[in-house]
Image (cartoon, rainbow, N blue to C red):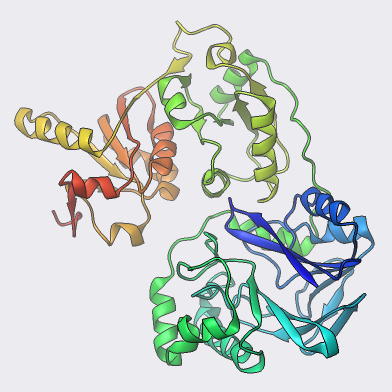
Length: 463
């Protein structure tokens, strides 16, 4: 018996394939099922069961397509309320696939219907447990994704579910969560890359704290989560369409500029410093890196025509793979090449814009100059509220990135320096702000450097 992990680092999630060498069980597969199919072919196994721990809130599942492609049974927790044929799993049900077997364990909390699956070995002894959004490494799944009215009740359920797993499963049971590797589905940050029930019993707040303390701590720790989550559950309940990972249709430079003028979304995938050095006026800069899909999905208005700008076709295809994971399936097209080519050679008529890039040391020098000269200067903090509560740059204005597009008129004109925790969100914010009348400067630096530059105060909104 072997368990293979399939990482989706951009969303902070994991899928799993368990196999006896001949038959396989797949747990919580992502939308781009070609990764699973390639693994199945490489291992020479047949998928017999596809399991979902819950109807997912943070990504579009590939379970329906994977089951249809492989002929496997598609298993969801009883009470999932989906609109397609499947096998419902009730608490205690045992599902067999070759020499493999899994037992469904009802673990509500992340959702009402959430179910974990214990992987059974010889004589049905428990070897591992797939915990989805229930018991994570040093944390548990967040409980506020169903509705505000359900959050407190689900938090109590989450505590009891974690306790049930710890009480019913052997200490040596390997724990395989879906969330908790950077996913916003985790209630609080997780720790570690592997664990067992016994290790969690000694460290996980759900297993070391009294129930009321756990509930209060979890509720106090909940922060904002991506807006695209609102689309994931309904899509997964309807049943996602087969995935399309093909290259979008090519678009001519003049047409790209027309789309920007018409208010469509044109997203530049290049590195944030390259975008700052020159980009199409009115385009948005979302560097294709680990944070790309989370923050594009957070700001994007679903249904708005979306065109991609990339240096190469491979870059565009990689972005498309990320986007289908959150249900952005229909792209209006793509254009590739250097930015002058993308601009159609029209660099003298305002087609291209640029802005400066600096760091926190540079911001400190600029603030000192501004104090001497009295010249107006705005410093914008694009981090979340929970991050801001731990301190910020003195005198800065706080507008979380996910609120900026709707509140951009609140940002003064003139010179605006933008920072965040790493430079990524600040780069997106800078691209949103970069319009005539503003002199934008991107602080492309880790926030830890702000303290070294003497810029951080505990209560920046009172400074």
